[in-house]
Length: 159
Image 1 (cartoon, rainbow, N blue to C red):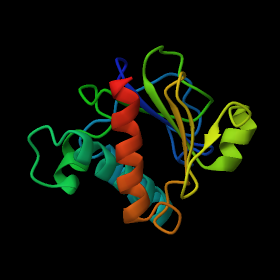
Image 2: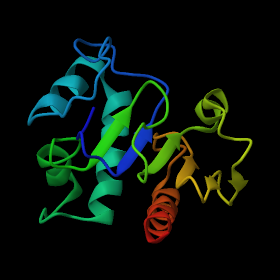
Image 3: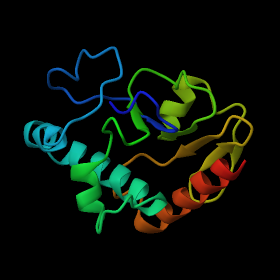
């Protein structure tokens, strides 16, 4: 899900179990109402993922929105967002900041070997602009950890 020209990608181990996302193989931007439809069909798990991604994106660049909720509903993972949510591995775009959601998924992707441990469950490969984050769930990615993730993304963007 997301913009073709993304510079921030979150890689996650699962995908929404509803059409067309359950079988989607190509990047597709979301349109207004898509997030609401996915959440209505799948429940709390995907609501948390979208909300945390929206909070992160809003904190990095509010893009004229007055709240993260407005950002989520109006920009998150849209064609204009410069963001992607990837279900099948790592980004194919060079130069983007990559967040792998969850250490277990990072291990499956084979990125933990080169990742330096940080505090609070984060790991980083500085040269690759890759961050391993706690899973996008409120219990694992608390507000304090989300603030730390924002700092790490900003640091990656600076080089």
